[in-house]
Amino acid sequence: MLTKQTALPDNTTPVLPNPRPHTVLGTDLLAEPGSGEQVIYLAGGCYWGVEEIMWQLPGVISTAVGFMGGFTAHPTYRQTCTGLTGHTETVRVVCKDDAIAHVIKTFWEMHDPTSLNRQGNDVGTQYRSAIFYTTDQQRNFIEQSIATYSKVLHDAGKGDIVTEVREANEAGPFYPAEDDHQQYLDKNPFGYRCHAATGMPCPMPGSGPLANTSPSDSHSFINLD
Image 1 (cartoon, rainbow, N blue to C red):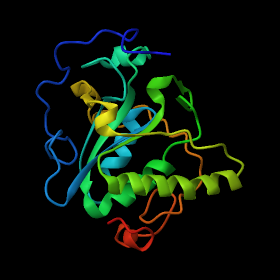
Image 2 (image 1 turned 30 degrees about the vertical axis):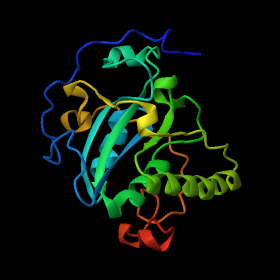
Image 3 (image 1 turned 90 degrees about the vertical axis):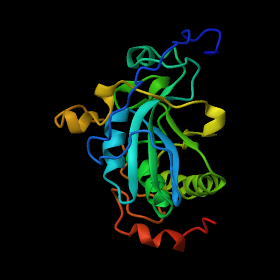
Image 4 (image 1 turned 120 degrees about the vertical axis):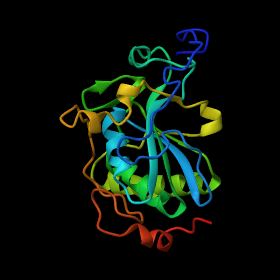
């Protein structure tokens, strides 16, 4: 089992010291959420494809790719790919408050949360499924969505959800990846996408890839207050 002592040593400087604006949304890449906004961190395999889906969702203000949940400070992409940093490829999502249900629903649907330490042909702890939440509202929503989605997956003969769920402060800092990885699929539209989804819709409010309801319906399912 990897520990701080056995992980790759810390780097002393960030790999993205001067982030450029989001190439699609035009917003500050690492802006802090303002009034009526919140941030959540999502890991669902290769972060290029996860970020592309997230920046297209209604109410999403900014996205950035990076590394989180491990030990090595300021890791590079190549270091993370060794599996020796403890981090998982993660997308930082800033969205409006009323879009968080939509974001979480879409996260469940766009990857396979029953697959341990892999998504499709991408294998290793750096591709593990994880949600790092920042509010009690998010935590409650995640817990209830896991309960409801687990039943759907079991009824379809799928396995248990193995997604790591941790408070962001406990998981540690989000370390942005290099500039060429930010909005990679906008810069390289024919680039690699890995979406090893289960194909099963998550019975939650908001419109993910496999549902037809509107994000405005979010409060009809769970009281998010």
